[in-house]
Amino acid sequence: MTKIIIEPNWCKSCGICVDFCPTNVLELDISGKLKVVDANACISCKLCEIRCPDLAIEIEED
Image 1 (cartoon, rainbow, N blue to C red):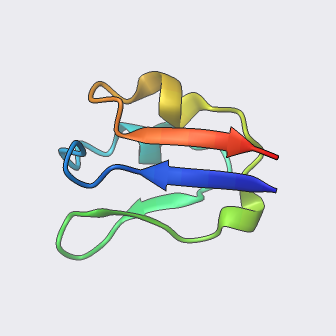
Image 2: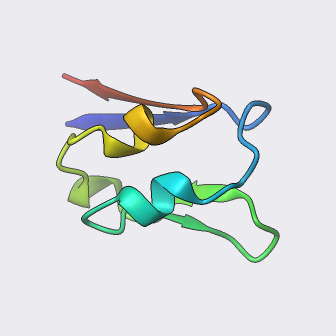
């Protein structure tokens, strides 16, 4: 199981993580805040974590 941790105080809602996610796990909501839409689809590639300029997202694997 993959755990997606988002630090909302660090996230600037740039959308880079959304653009790099190959399985569309992440999206920006109507107010522009990052949210996880389907954690079960996460393949733990960590592209979101690697590309986040603010280190606001972390992927943990069991």
